[in-house]
Image (cartoon, rainbow, N blue to C red; front, side, top):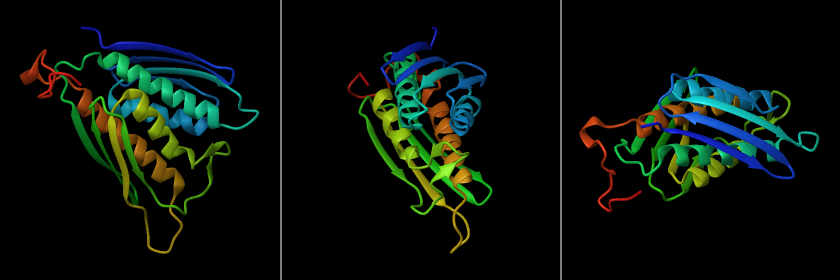
Length: 204
């Protein structure tokens, strides 16, 4: 069974194409015009073991908001489409990922019920790489979670030395790596549950 998706999202602000293979080898081909965001989406591909192609053209002359948001919405829709009825999946996934001084946690349930909890330090730098506003990280997970129809909890458990400003790059990248690993686990097929939707309701 092919667990792939192709999503095209076109608005007056952005044009987004996402192609996803859940059973890939971690190959990412990402181009959004926001360099740091490209780097983060490549973490989803590499550490999730997904083949992921993202091409976004957005109104970056205004700011990165629409580009980042619409890409996250399309990415979530791609996961929802590729998962289909979710028969045979593991369903739950969790990961803790360190990045030097930072420790991030991600927990996912392919529940069909969109719900997102996000916790990170409030005093991180406002931008990374010039055109990635760190305030958008929460919005990425909210947009992705609601579009993918998953329950997602993302938290920073440790952010560095007491009294020092946290490293924004490490904080955001650790989150993406943790979410990738949690998704990898949740989306994996469970050989003990072949063809069965992992829910007492019989549907997710």
